[in-house]
Length: 114
Image 1: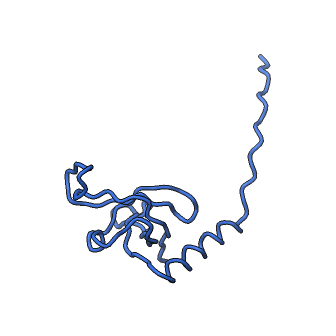
Image 2: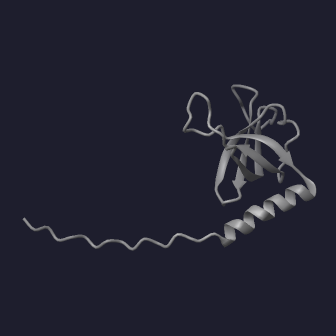
Image 3: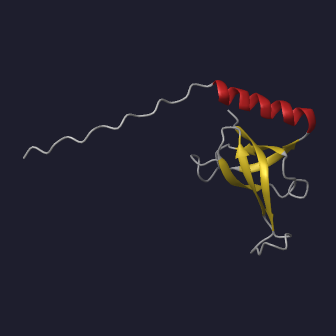
């Protein structure tokens, strides 16, 4: 199976930005994912110059070869236009419809019996 996550770019962190000091030339992006998480991901260098705030992106969540239980978590595609809008809406609609977890009732403490 192949796994990808969909997200929307909120901010871009590039060494080219005058407000950022960087130890390397990598680019990261602050992303709101379809399931309402906010995470910073690495951006694949081949698309880092094209990325804009508001873009819908695909994030590679396939396992790494060195750590098979850890996803890559790298932005690999930028979606724009109608394809981006439809993809984002499809995921958000699914998120609205999926069953919500019921809140866990706190367990009252058991009195100590010595």
